Length: 353
Image 1 (cartoon, one colour):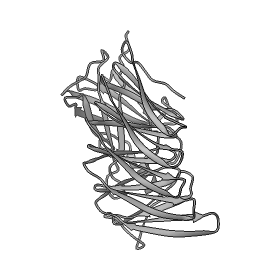
Image 2 (cartoon, rainbow, N blue to C red):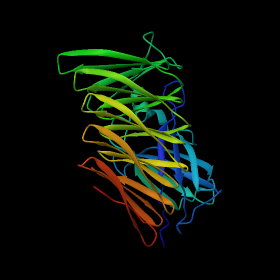
Image 3 (cartoon, one colour):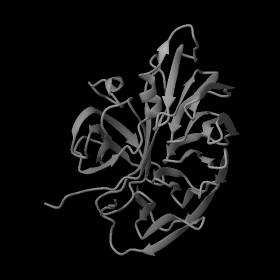
Image 4 (cartoon, rainbow, N blue to C red):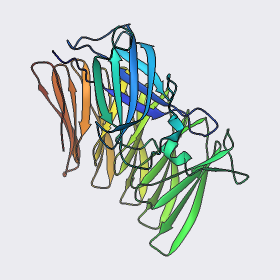
């Protein structure tokens, strides 16, 4: 019997943070049948499972949805809002690695013949941070909770409410300080790299970072469009909307900055490596990188074919479509570039290390 399969390109973001509000992750995927044809404007059945530790790991949460794809074969749903007997809020995001497995019935039922599994390359920090939050009189957001996030290296911690964010850092083992900023818009979530923490709302993004000279500061930027998602690498954080992508990086010279680019097409997802971040739509891909600790920039390329998947290694990111493969990398000389090749046959997978 021929095995039916699909490659799903997706993006996940935390859409609600706090214990008293529903905890959801927005999920988007391009759905194609086993013949590599888009399922356009179709009623489909989807089963979503959150797996722990491996692509074949134990399912810690499972739910089902009935959904409809759009003209581009894109389906959008909220993980945590499907039909289930499990408890989404009971997932302990602080332990192990997690994968999202989707199984699809293109006829709208529960005969799931199409499947795909992808790793969550970064913890849904707003959900993970919720576990460190505490409610009380010290501060509150719209639901009465304080939420905390820390850098992956543990050098800095940010506590934020619905109206303010408070960053704490220690300098060279000799001093420490708090640095606060007010927040505009409705808080959506947080994204964290080794060297910075970004809190983003419906209208703005706020980056907290510590500099080599022994100081720390907040750096903000306004956002245009509807926030779609966020992602981080070791050195950078990116927040993207349906019309723009915003990258923040900290520089060795003792400063940090936001760098933005407009995006064309419908946002599909993102991928990261240690040094780079890529945001991609159904027609273009945008790479963000930082050079030699002193500057950062966006570099874009147009895509041919239907996007199938993306993967990041330690230093490069590769994205495939139904007809081409695109590689993005950063060079020691202080530049980055896209390099593409045409492919023959239907894409069946992507691997890297």
